[in-house]
Length: 568
Image (cartoon, rainbow, N blue to C red):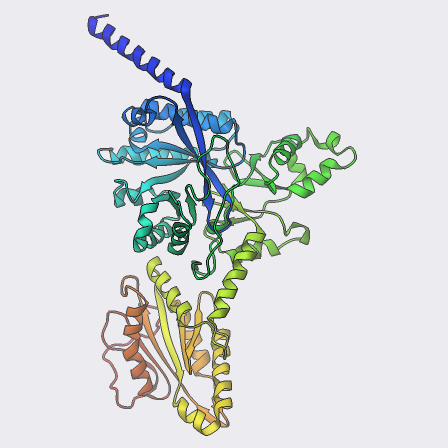
């Protein structure tokens, strides 16, 4: 061994001795990640709190130290917390250098936890980090079952292209971005496209919490809810939701907003193990038994299980037997389901299971959490109250805000749509000749006909007087138009006709509902210029229009035509 090797060995020994010294004094704190919809704790972030030295600076420079720190953080949490999902911080450079976190995976398995109960918070700096190596490491972690969070977005240096390539399960946005609500809303849109949740960290005031909610964040953490503490806590303060701050996701509230942490045990767990978990965690309403891949195979309801165990000879009969024998087939929904779809799942089966948690699974069938019926009913009731306030008193149909909001969501989702305007021809003459009562009844009848003809994702709105808006998928437009335009309409014994104008919008053809409405305006004028029941069709970004119904009067027919508005 030469002098250089002797010197290098001495340096390494001193380095390991220094590492051992700070690990002896290292402590960890836990800060809850809060679900802004349910008010519950969605998980715990583990924060290093060294009593001496700057371990984070050391970890930033040395991937081996950072990797070891992640293992120590998990072990500290595993000793104190057995139910809530955990968030473990790792620098992006560490993942790129180590190519994964095999020691952490081993520690998770040794503690009896499942990898998908652990989220890796990938933090900056990203500058000079080999992106290909980082993405490969993230792919390896996903293959092991870990969930991925992009941390420090907003005030960090993560490139937007890298963020989309990472396709994280969660994006953590710095609270300073709340002063730029447009940026937060844009990040929520990106998260929807990536099938990720949006979390705002560093929330300190109720005003910031309200801003996070109104901008669409589903999760948050910060001093307002609970400061970092040496002992994990599920007790947090969440300000009540203020009127007008609710976000209405597409087609009803998304199940993602209501996901609670799931209590998971292996499918082979004994009844005694389930009983120990339930008695030690009174907030847990049930346990899901999962296979080796994290797929739910049985659902154990708290009350029914404990009732069986507390009966005469119950403990003696069941304690050492598989808990699966006391469970039921799990009820599951995908992460993209809506609250209404969850209610459909709950409605199937016996009434004794209406209080069971519903497991939320990812595209691999792995459990990512549960939803509770009470949370859904409360949120849907609030949604109905808000919708009722905006309903037209004559037809009980929503107004223009509901339709234009849905238009903007479809534009953001990159979905094609058809926006239509419909009204009664010469409605003033109808009122003058047949009376206001007959006119009102005609309006109600048209509204009922539109509602009856609407199917799937079609939305109908009454924007006042005899004007209606209809938002539909292009392929569903022709049947609706035929059912309404072909019907014989009358008021006070006088025949009445309707006019319909439609603008077809392909992805990228319009930027928002205002531009779509501007494209629709000349088509309304063209439809009203025709005699008889009329229908005029145009395409956003193209000049001209097609007359599908009605007799030409002053407006000449356009040069181009389409046979089916649902086809290009």
